[in-house]
Length: 240
Image 1 (cartoon, rainbow, N blue to C red):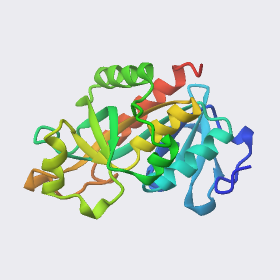
Image 2 (cartoon, helix red, strand yellow; image 1 turned 45 degrees about the vertical axis):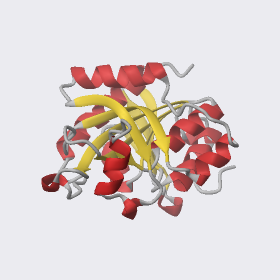
Image 3 (tube, rainbow, N blue to C red; image 1 turned 120 degrees about the horizontal axis):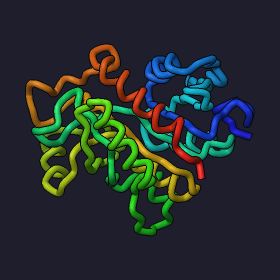
Image 4 (cartoon, rainbow, N blue to C red; image 1 turned 45 degrees about the horizontal axis):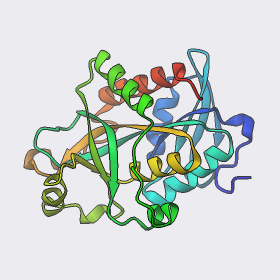
């Protein structure tokens, strides 16, 4: 049984949304009918309810690769089959602005020890489930979001992200930085579950006027739309 998510198997739906911030998890749970708190141990707040009569779980994964790896493993132990991350990312290019939405088509990492251990030295493509990725992107456009696809780097060291960091990675085609997608896609590959992500751009590392990070309060409208996007897709997406 899981050590950190103290829930029963029947408490966790096959379709799961994960977020780093417990406040964002609580926010998204408001879109569910009959949402109930099924875990609060270790601050990994987890709610399960219904969206259009489909059971969906919303879970907190914390910050960084080790934290999300633990939460994903335990959610999968409890029956999760499709997992979508709703998060934030910092833009590394001058044409992705705060409030824009990015659907990652590929994640890379900077020698993350967590991912290296999972892959055991293998070179593997860290990509989302193709059908889920396409559906998230298509549905986002139909909902009127300023949404695009791109490549993200999942970085383990938050306070080393700088203009030099942005230049280094954008020069080889990386669009944004965050901390968890590479681990999400790795565990999806290893554990054979479908994964995807939708990221709201919270700041821009190359534009001085957009360097300040914005959160849920300032970006509530776009988080509302991305929440509806992901719940709409999950409610109709096949688990197998």
